[in-house]
Length: 60
Length: 439
Image (cartoon, rainbow over all chains, first blue to last red; front, top):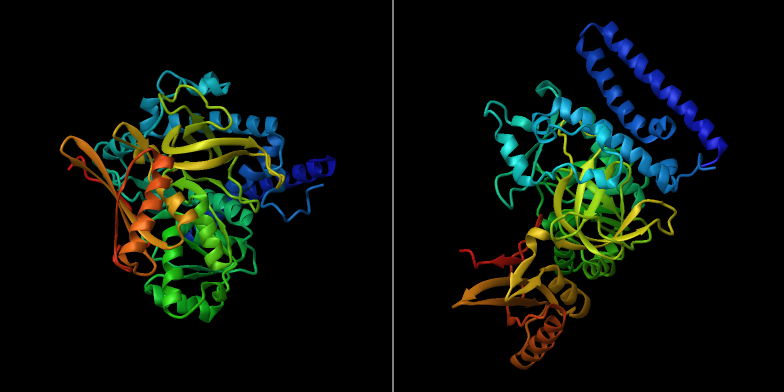
């Protein structure tokens, strides 16, 4: 892994964090309405997977 | 620069140096242990008095108790109010998927997954299928009704996520499946090794050469796949055939790359220990057989720490010519609960399969039975040839097979022949070994 990889991974980690934050905000705005709540929950499940595969590399 | 590489599913993680990989595994292990203690009634009790911070080295892991299938069965009983008892690590309303073990060795274990944990399992399978060369251009046929059994569901959703076209092949008989594969131009399959052989046999009976069906790759699941059987499948189908190892409880935790020489442990999804067979008190060395103890590090709905898989494997090297840096399993020998002592000799049924598939192509199916005759154990092998043999040919073949088995297993087998088509065929887990001594 070289410098370009590390820079790219850092940017990706930031985007993953942003997506997670935005998804939580969207879920809260939905106020429990299923179409918003269930779809944002799915987005958060995928961010869990991305954090495991990408963010973990940079969090060390 | 790895950024643009499509050779790996996750090029950064899969080629990471060992030191960093292990750092990630340990950090995730402690995080996971903390979660399990906080959310799983089973581990709240089981890990009482040990804190995640106490686990700094691989030796420290052995301070934690193993979890075996019986622990899970007991925890599942819980207070009797919930289906999952003390196993569940999330609120019941978060559970989106029910799967269960096959129940071969006792009452099935129910495995609840939240959508998040299910996606984690699917991601593991994305690694497996990508390593096996599955790509967006593949049309993947899954010749099973998957029912509650997890592997083909995982494979189905992972293939879909990869961008493959997935065709579920349940509710058809084997001839119907062969016809469907030809009709749609399937290029890949997910199946048990036994069923791969059975489909090929059926295709030949239909006058179809399996090679002409067009399957380029086959990911096997559900049963041990000795190298000889894997090569046999490759020859019959004209396809690349891939193995993996795993189970319903921990998920699939090691798989083959394009080199097809051993299995990569899927690090850092799993922290895998390969421990001595005697009392699981030390990690074995490279080239030594051991029992695989597996902790999946990202599933919250069904926390599982140091699960004793009972899988007996040979520890391999670190790294591989494919560029992946993970630890390898050089061989899967079988399951400890399939190891039997017969006349004082340790025996695993896989050793018979290896010899028959590698050296005796005239044999199509087989069945091993161990029974007591007086005080003595007696081991019998029923062989089904592709074509009926005359008495002289049978006697000669039985003699040659008996000699090879004696050399390999140190046991003398009573060999008899079945007619072609007489022995049962299996779609999921085969039952070619029967130990009747306890009956």
